[in-house]
Length: 413
Image (tube, rainbow, N blue to C red; front, side, top):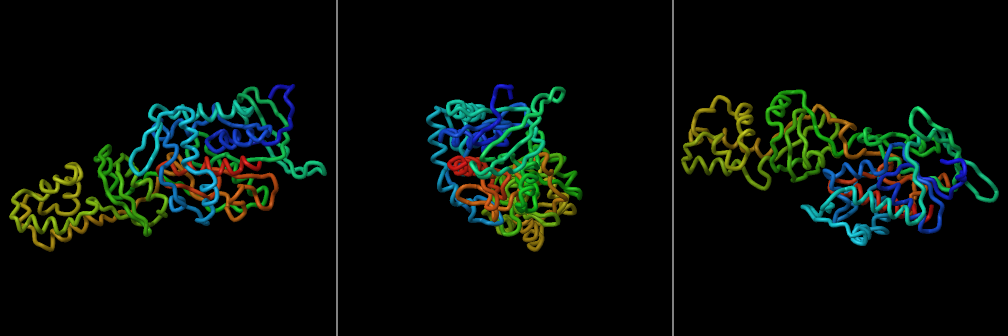
């Protein structure tokens, strides 16, 4: 901050990601003097990396069921106040071309940079100040007869060699600091520390939307299959998703795996149906009736990728590798069919926060107003976006939560 810049603001927002930037422009449009502090060297880093650089900025079909939280009702108010259609309108006003992919996912046609540019423009037009390279040293609540609750912050600004300490004051403090996922893009736990400082509960956290790893017999199999993908249904703990599965040199990834990882806990088995919506046992028994003379592996190649059938043969019928399908017993074919439809595997773990797209858990929503995102026990303190215990499925839902929670906070902060 230059020496002439006053240290008092109406609203200070920690974090220049999706939620922080959108909240800033929303509050500034009400005439609030807004400052955004970002610890990284540039704004919107996670937006730029999202959706393969195309940013899956929302989804056409947003329901409370697309979100995970200890309080499944908490997200409803914000999502209905500022919906996906509201954000789509803004994207269209900025003449950003977008396309719909499967499951209602909306992506930029050109680049995620367009979403960051849109948010930056909205902030500039409404007079928001944005400062990067800012580390928060401490925050404290202040009270005065005139203003009610307020906050004093001490920040260190600048490059590591030449950081300057600044003191700032505000009436409203908005925590949009993100969470623990992808620390290289700015993920950190500072939002949880601030919550705990002000006596708010923080729920248990773990990585979500994250690939699985294996340490058993599956590890070398995944290494050999690395880069291969197929559509599967994957299920765990009563949840199921039908999407692509991708083998990696560490384990399995792809949309189906990322989705189910939100419902998996250490020690759980996952179940993979390699032929979703198709009874493999019936199909194999019918093939035997039809006197199919090819090897079982060759027959399965009609519906399952060749590289995978080689591996399945080595696990499930190594002794019968050379015999034709019609020489298998009905019992053997039924068993193999059942395994194709219900392949049970036990991951050793996930790849963790390093590659996780979200952090499950966070600031307990019981202490937060669902209508404003303000802490119930601390006037003028707001939490928005991923720092809260609200996590969306893959498909644009986490961005929509960022926009919706940011908007309702920006209306009152």
